[in-house]
Image (tube, rainbow, N blue to C red; front, side, top):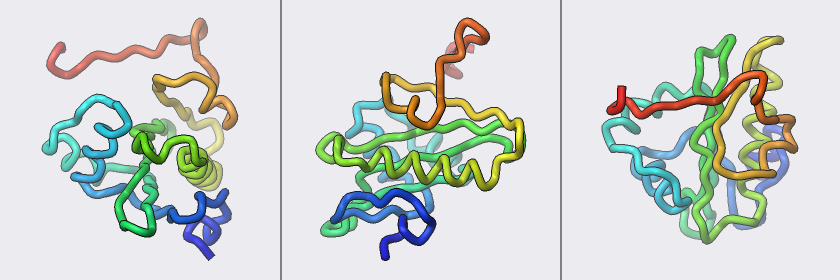
Length: 150
């Protein structure tokens, strides 16, 4: 039985295993880079990862190397933000991202109080909609600013 089967989730592809924890700081930074996402400093990641509400990562069993990650951050009660969903480019298109999102959504269904707000910011279209995510505009607008620009 794989780790994902143990928690009742869609299985990751053969040759991979889902772990219910965020990856290491080094793996987090590497995965963001390999997925074409913006860099995060070592200091920022080391400070932020312990504040993960719930996180998963996927390892390639042959090498033991993390190839994907996803996590939820928030206050644990009224706001949950899906963040840092990334799969290293050579491993994309195999169902790893789907298995990780299935894990996050299963955790949210079991742990997020009724009426809690679950949000995300994404640079891809057509992926998150299968779990019920939809654009918030025009009812609300997603906005952001980098800390250095404040």
